[in-house]
Amino acid sequence: MNQLGPLFREARAQSGKSIDDAVKETKIAKRYLLAIENENFDIFPGETYLIGFIRNYSQFLGLDPDEMILKYRDYKIQEQPAPIEQLTAKPRYQKRFILIGVIFVIVISTVLYVLLSSSRERVRKREKEPIATAVEEEKVPKKTEGVVVFEEEEIIKDFVRGDVIEIPLKNVAYRISIDAIDENLEFSIGDIPFTLSTDERVEIDFDRDGRKDVLLRTNRLGEGTVNITLKKIFKTESSDLSIGLGNEASEAAAPVTPDTPPEVVIIKEDELFTEIPVAPKTGFQIFSGYEKTDINAGIKAVSTAYLAYAIDEEDKREFLLRNGDELTFTAKDVARIMASNARGINVQINGVTVTIGKGGETVAKVIRWYRDSDDSDLYHLIMDNWEK
Image (cartoon, rainbow, N blue to C red; front, side):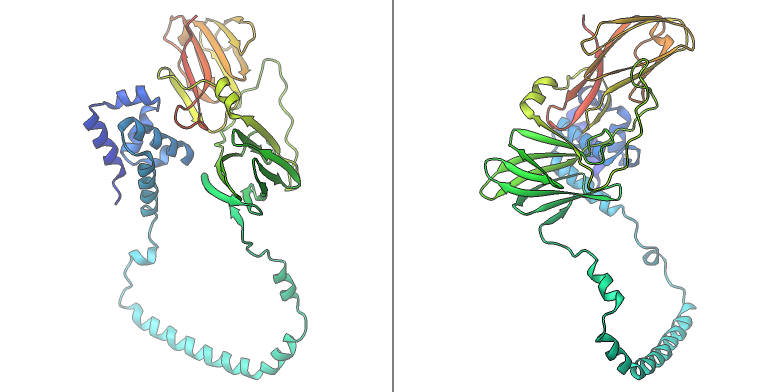
């Protein structure tokens, strides 16, 4: 057994850090850190989260992140259950039944051989005629060289002109074709061509459900080859909160097919880094993921409380809430909440319940998207004190 958990526990003990110290510095919830140390990986919402947390926790403890992720993958393979027939011994009394079965197989084989021999001539004649099964077999797609099926969470791989990346999604196979490699990468999705430079990234929503599916980035362009990072963007579950005050619910998305044009967003990485700050070492991490979504807030009063909020660059709105009152709002990048009697309201951010203060306490909080200091593709939604 690859003892992954003890490696983290021993490293933390040697560093002199408590589990609470680790929570404060990594911004990872305590139950997830304990789950890593106890190899309780089933509680994580997805492997993308787990890999990201292992990487961050390893860096905090001075361990090699890549080595620890490799150990986790080895652990996962070792945890696969053995076939039941390898775990149970065959009783002795089964031997005679096995012998009877062998005899039965020999008899049946002899009968089949005689029948097949007598009809050999008929088979030869049929082989000269076209048959439906042969036609059907020709319709089965053959495995084509240069086609890479993207089924993992992330791959980093060299590609050449003519290569095709196939992405299965909701029983539909979408394809990205590498068309040309020179100063830029020329690729196409279906019949739609795109150009990408090394300082840009692409986020693609293949099924046009409003959430990005795949991130594509060119790491290096060489002579006839391109090194590409492909990463599946973790899709956060949508909450039941309405978006905006008085906004109507969005219409159901139309059915999509492989011929439906995807939504493709090309982003300059310099602009992205300028717009989204690096995550601070303070505050409460609501969740992390590879998709930067809107910030959806739902608030319900359980006693009388004053509430004010401001979203993005808009002006502040103020309310006096009484028991049972509810309101919702949405922000693109940042939301600020001020409340008196903070315990008198229940707050949900993108479906996650958060505590903003104690009973009778007056608080001011800011909720904002940040990017990870080590993994520029990873976003953190963090709530911190709002310094006026």
